[in-house]
Length: 221
Image 1 (cartoon, rainbow, N blue to C red):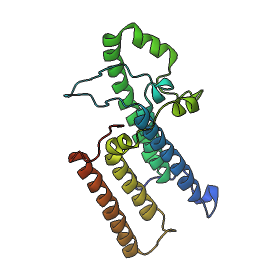
Image 2 (tube, rainbow, N blue to C red):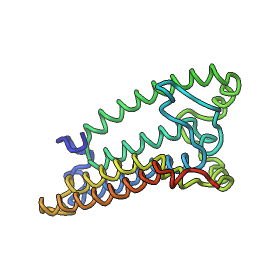
Image 3 (spheres, helix red, strand yellow):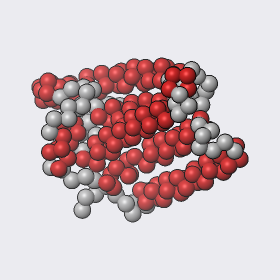
């Protein structure tokens, strides 16, 4: 949907000839904020999202890392990444349709997960909910949290490489094909896009190889 014709969020009539800087800078800030939140969350303390055997699943109640400051930081990161790409594409339709749709989906997922966690962990989960917000990140003491834990960059790479590949290809697509200011020649655009996708694909394939061969694991040892 990011490439569909849409009324702009930022128009030349409102913001002048350099109007495109507003969606680019704002969109990149928002979408990179989402990935930073996801990256720090995964690197500090990971929760198995998506369940196990098509069922909600939890080995333990994870309350450390960024989960001390927000109950669903991975979902917050996802939403910011999606929102940022929509702003980057300067698409009012994308932001107006896709974001509310995903907010509804994530709210439904969270309610199902919370029901499972409440049944499994009881009072411990209720106490956690009373101290930590479902969606809003409380940044109080977050620097102490980060300093007090070791960031597992291998886990971030191994868990996030799929998301990073799709996300970076999406950003490249938007910048090249939504903004002629970067390159107006269609053939050069296609060439740059192809080279970028091949390069990202090589990195993706290498990380996947390391993961499947277990030459890289998320062990901290």
